[in-house]
Amino acid sequence: MAQTIKSSTTKAAKEKADKVYATFKNLCSWRENEMSGAFLEKMCQDLIAWADLPSSLKITQFMREYGIPEKTFYRTVHSNADFKEAYWYALTAIGDKREIGALKREYDAGTVDKTISHYCSVNAAAEERRAKLKREEQGSSIEDLTNCVQALVQQKWGDKNEKENEEKI
Image 1 (cartoon, one colour):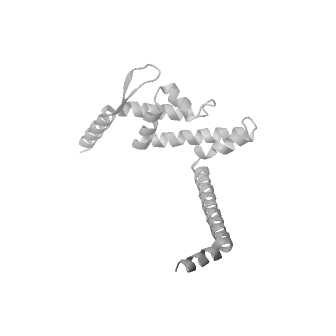
Image 2 (cartoon, helix red, strand yellow):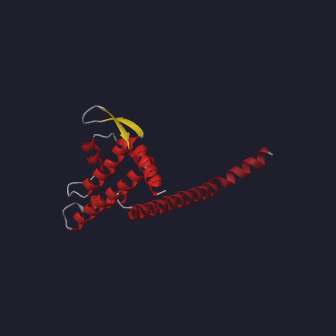
Image 3 (cartoon, helix red, strand yellow):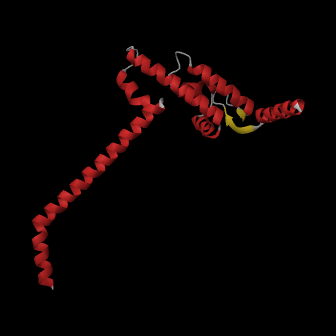
């Protein structure tokens, strides 16, 4: 029984490694590459290792080093759970480096503050809430302004329009 389970697990792992999920043109070698399960697994490992390097500050650096087009990279993030996990690990590592660098005055704090929501889900949620509140505030301001203008128009010309309408009747 144990031999059967081990054999089927090994077979499933081999099939997953051999499965081709997509192809892409490598921008460094200009060759067509297959994105197999084995390739994705290695890319996940490479992304995690790369994210921990001190020089890794933007995810686009990894894309350029790997030669993977941005569109292909993000399509893979959305379609592969393992790669998505590695991607979020990398973003968090980059965000940590940038934020700590700003605290140590290695990076401009204003720039880091403006972009930190790209690298941290907590900051992204807070930024989304701020944007939503701002939209709601602007919406109510526009609504208040519209009502004010309508009241002024009614006050200024409302009587004339009523008299003209009465004369037409």
